[in-house]
Length: 165
Length: 343
Image 1: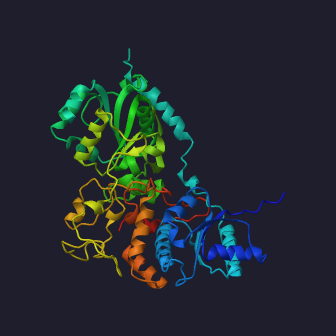
Image 2: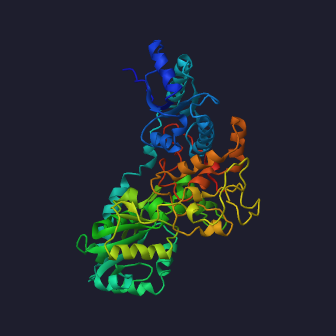
């Protein structure tokens, strides 16, 4: 029996004006890319709160991509510069939490760059596949004996109240 | 109706206070309501309050379910014994209030999630200069003695909030909650004028709204640590380069720290509608950095915020989306413990 290949789940936030259209272009031009991304369209990469990324990772995503217009080409003038700074702040925090760098990626892709976006997706999927599953919520689970210890406490309290004969 | 009348009018109920992983400051904060504690005693029989009243856990266990009207529970959950008490108080109480930052969002005990249980034991039982432990003994959860088996609670790998452990009716934020807010909450409970279950009893604005400093456009090219500058008394501290958490923090304290020149550290927890305090701080601080050059941005952040967990999650790591740092032997993630050292 062959071992099944790990297929990472990647959540991608794509801006409406450039990156989502790049993905559309990749589709109409029949450019193939890895099917591991779940794309979410947002009006601007500046809309992507770091909380979205953290929540995606906590809920089971193995990686998150944020894609937006190239710096200087934002539909809303300069919001993608805010994305850039926020992303830097987020990466800085994630590295001290112990989330590998490759799991969160910022990608600029104009509406004409279907090929580049597809390449970036392929690259990221491969990198995350190398790293393996993130499975973040497994970090929260406690030893199974804890439940027994909790149940034992009520008995102990009752025993302690008994006056020895 | 004044609170006093409300206290008289209401039938005498039962009140419990309990502490789990906390410092005891919340207990003192309750006494900060001063002589109004007498009104509380008029309105309630205190059935459990380990710091002040001699009551047995066993007598709580024997009470009927939901027979305690109000339980103010402070402290985070870090041992199996604390989890047991959280479940017990939930079962016996009509209204369970997560009282203070530890129960609400983990607070300082929750910063243990920036390291591991193994590292904590290593420090506490071996490495500290005042520890004398030549046999390298560590506490065990079970020990056989002549009289039988002795048990100690399990020490959790990850500190939890009260809300992550049991269903919580109301949250009272603050480290510790200000006496005025505690009194407001008690009055709200006595007068039955409570918000929807699950909500935070408190303001819906931020510390900035209470701060007397002048705010203008924020443009920062360098973050400064508190010891590096003496801030002027008029201007917003963030505009002066200090990482002030007032922008993300719920009002309720009266902006005590920024008023006297010390940046807000976020003890009142996230403002209404914010789930992850750190994410909100990252967003806010990113907006004020005055640079469009990726390398310069990286440098400003790296040099200005050497300890992102301690800066963004000082009070809320356990309640954040990710809750803790990665454990070394898990999913290939390699926790960088050295960066989790306090700055």
